[in-house]
Length: 268
Image 1 (cartoon, rainbow, N blue to C red):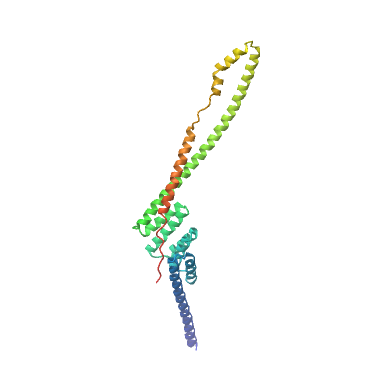
Image 2: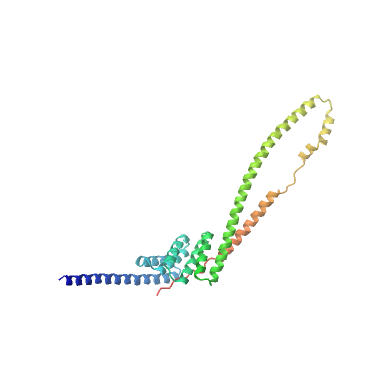
């Protein structure tokens, strides 16, 4: 009797397990079908509809690296690069094929490049090269990301130096203003003394006018100053021109690097 009960339990357990396996295989088939449907929509440039299909595939098979990778590409094409990065990271963790990983990390690097997160882009391209060292496209984008990162760091360093210099100039200006205020007081006092001395003089008006004409200090005050740039203004103008040139070159470089690597993974 006990033996028969054990046999019944064993068959019941086997039946349940078989049913679960059958259901899992069915879900995986349906997931692959959704991936294929998503690929067709993607190739028709219907990226929003393709995104829906890939999400359905993931709901049926959360472990589908192809669905996660393709979903990242569809989201990337819609300009939502931060979301695309999250999907690339997920597919990179589950992917076991080195070539697939190389493509995933390359596209991840492209996403970081669009976000102007150049340090992260450099690391992503390096990971792509570790999985496929012969990819010239990745090598080029890596060099570009490294250059943009260096330019960004140089600009930050320059901005910090300029900020420190401006703070120093402000302090010196405050000091000069204080010195000037003191000098103006002394000058006013001197004028007052000169005025008092003038009262005691008995020179005629003609002599006073003559003295004014011969006063070099007054003559200098009447002369117009030449309209020319100071050395600091010239430096600021040159810096502004260089910054515009760098921005133009950076835009050209970013256009070159807009990843051609975005490839859809064909499911079988």
